[in-house]
Image 1 (cartoon, rainbow over the protein chains, first blue to last red):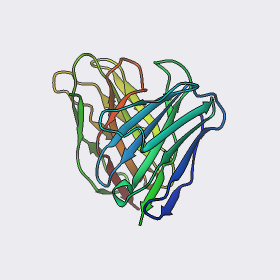
Image 2: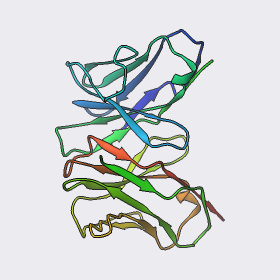
Image 3: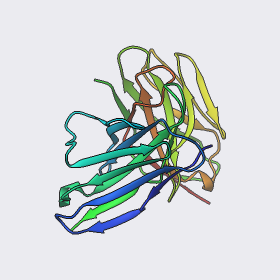
Length: 116
Length: 114
């Protein structure tokens, strides 16, 4: 299977600062990438869908100005949590899809964000 | 709206025991159903899938059958191994065959003891 690498695996930041999480498809070109958030003992919740070269589509209730998503190339998408607060502490997971609908999506290992 | 409910863990079994992890879903239309596995320190991996009613997905000794009448997609394995210890997620996609827009269950942690 294809490999998706997420970096960092974990990060601790101070309240009010911004944190950037990277998601890279290492051996394929990802036309679409997805960002999920998972709270303890909860499901993965889709935050946004991004297609290379265009603006991300955010799910209802997700603040686009707080969670900035950039998908500037076919192998890299970034999620920036701006002005982080403790309630943003969570597990963030990305996935990448190689082709149009019908193709398998591959997941990164996730990033544990803790805001103190 | 669409949703997935799976049994809460953790589930602890001895090696060679029989495994069932229950998963039921609520969806309109014709969803595709998936089981993902997440081994410690790794990303989610697709374990198996089924795209229509009565389909059986299978991989690595795991099986799940798409039951439309009971809206279920239970995961089973006849004889678990220590290496099967992981978190298992049931998921559905509301577009047939697509894994893009997935709705996940909460995950079930499985621990297999030697």
